[in-house]
Amino acid sequence: MATMTRLNRLTLADVRDLLGAEVLNGDDLSIKVEAVGAADLLSDVLALSKTGTLLLTGLVSTQVIRTAIVADLCGVVFVRGKKPGPDIISLARESSVPVLATPLRMFEAAGRLYRTLSETT
Amino acid sequence: MAEWFESVYQVLGRDFSNAGKVSTSIKDTLKRIGISPAVVRRVAIVSYEAEMNLVMYATRGKIVLSVSRDAVTLKVEDEGPGIPDVALAMQEGYSTATPEMREMGFGAGMGLPNIRRNADEFDIRSEVGRGTHLFVRVAHRQDSV
Image (tube, rainbow over all chains, first blue to last red; front, side, top):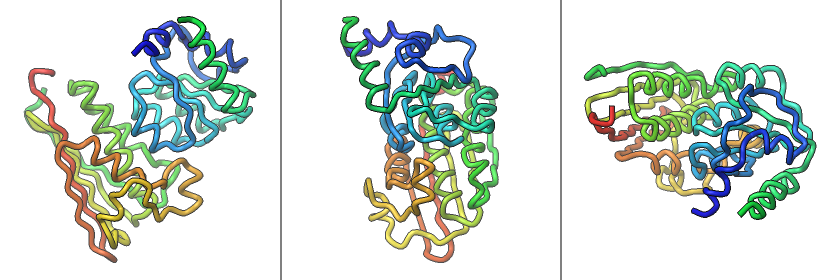
């Protein structure tokens, strides 16, 4: 559970800075990231994630936001410069799901977060 | 909290743009009536996987949410192709999904196993050419309300 303690120091604002991400939805970036997961398979997110997980994904669909709502995720980061459409953003707004977008690929994005978390022990 | 509560939601097959709407509304309802967050999350995951199955495979169906003093139950009944081999469908990774379903992030053979994992009681009956009936019960304690 050491990872959890480290993760408690990470906020959405930190994630934005580390990933050079654009914030597409979310007013409160002081939200704590309890865990990070990377997946394109939403059933895996539903099976494996914990409440407060930040999801990195290359999948762009409204189902990503619905998954975030259902699984109590703390936010979603779309990778590889993918831009979610207005339907996705408006659903995220309605349901208060923070959404970020980074030009980085999944591996690089996950790597930066992992490295930062390992260094801040 | 009400002692007993029941609500019926209709779901249309192939209606991908609304897929998941029912489950988020079920989640809101359970939260509002004071069910504990852990139970709400489990029921929402069950409901969402079942709703996606329904949208992906069935013609139409309904999800019946019931809340009693000690449990939340979901009954999901659809009209659709049914499942020829339920035991096989319960295996993680077994899937009959199309590429279109996989592109949405589903259809990797994790849905039914995910549903069972979150259920305290689970029952599935299916008839080929008719449809599938699913029953899930998640216990909650009145004192957590």
